[in-house]
Length: 390
Image (cartoon, rainbow, N blue to C red; front, side, top):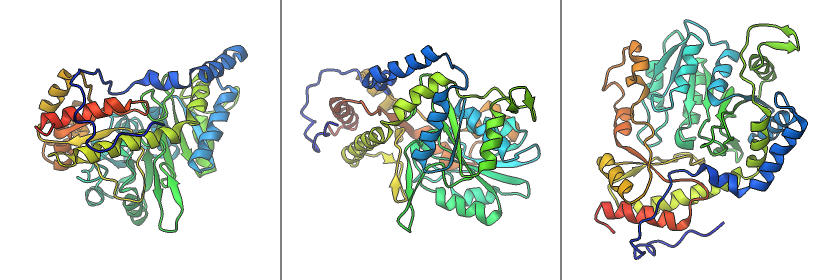
């Protein structure tokens, strides 16, 4: 892995415009193309496209990676969330609290169970659920909290777990952006994202830290009964080939995606290390500018799926960087409580001021493990130039 340049040495670089991708999905493919092609070819030769051997292989490997007994592959991260809620008996009349700063799938899964989505505000430091806002949202109908590791940050999870334990609520972890995130506990042990709640839900969408070549997902759990139920849910409620205990879904992980994930899982820790190195560089070189960063407030490992800064002149900076050939993203421009899909919940603008402020000011900079050092230099130089600090 190449070493990132030292502080300030890049500011005299050439002014030649560079095209900087926000994320280059193909880069991870090219990095391990022969191994990946061979894995896919083996599936094609066997023909076990549904319920093939690579699925159980990946499930065993990912469970071992996370340090937990059970993993059940799913068709997507959305399916994983839905299956988790069903396995935990979330039903109509229940309320489930989550963050408005997440992809809509988190809330969709709640609605698909017939339960009511309840939002709570976020912490300005971690950008994850604020414990006090969550506690204020609890009612006699509250059954669960879905904690989203936004951008891969596990900060705040322990506080939310304590809150769930105090009120007898189920904790579900949405780890769609947290592959490789860890929390170090006071006793010296560490826990992977997804292992502190009763169920952890992962997406393997191609752009994720651990991405398939299509849609894929998984749930992890320490509870055998939940894993058994989840495995039936994803396969039409099936116990045997033509014996169905209940109506389920076609939420199976397919064999080709599992084969790809087995290959890519081997590089996940190295990829997270590289992501952290790039983000540390961004933070060091942009620290004197009028921008703020998401904080890791707990001993642990941030998965660094995204690197987002907050600033008042977000739109102007984005336009400036685009003219310099630099792609950026916004995650997320409209918090869920203000989306038309949730207008029926009655939330008004201003009710969650932190989430709304972050949505109006957040900008994600280019980040992926294969991002060349010279591109990191260029992004830093151009952000500094925008603020007159070049």
